[in-house]
Length: 314
Image 1 (cartoon, rainbow, N blue to C red):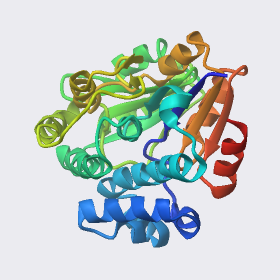
Image 2 (spheres, rainbow, N blue to C red):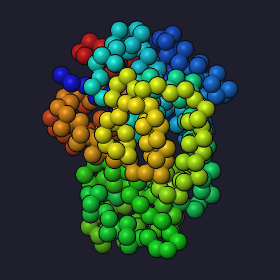
Image 3 (cartoon, rainbow, N blue to C red):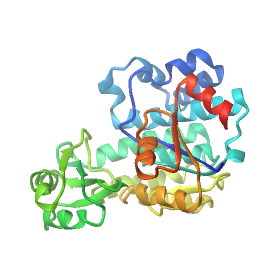
Image 4 (tube, rainbow, N blue to C red):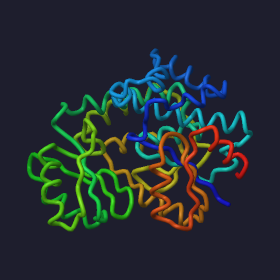
């Protein structure tokens, strides 16, 4: 068996996340406290009690999802003796999940990862005025075929790009509000089954995020980084890297670049990965893996029962 551990991105959060882990493991409580201390905020209270509107604020969502993922990682390692560095052939994460993956691979400390994601969340939110940009999921078109739709929605002033290549038949567009609205209107003409506006407040992974990329370039200069102890598959490359300067370079590019998740899944398949384990909130990535590769065993691990089952079978 060959394992890859993957980490969810924005949209997987839910009020109550982390509560069960904290009730059962001091290790998890320590993770949540360290993140609280790093951010000088009771983020754990927002994670477990809400309100939902506060949890879904980008500046809270990003470190919160990472904290939950890392609590699962630390519980596996400290309470169940599962060493990710021995078990994992690769780690990867979807968008902000790439920071969770980097933390799990010891590129950044937990505190620094929380601070980076707080800065990233705020910078991405501030890069574009609310209402000026958005995202939409195109269902039923491949990444290749969505190009014509993107071209039809782009003009001199309105940006539209393919931001997330999630799987065959699911591509997320990002850009100016006018361009996204046009894509939703005309997508069926290009063969899409549907095109759905996403409940996000900014055009992530598009050139409109350039100011946020500049902020992140400065933020990375303030943290200590180490080479990855597990090969990390970068979103913008869909290939593994380990050298910390390369990881930082591609994390900065990722702010404006495409999340190449379909190609990441293809790469894992080519490398004969048999088991994909999604650590943290939700089941989005394990769901994509199950749909795109029937041969791969994909599971999501976030509850105590799921952690125990993984520990017994890995």
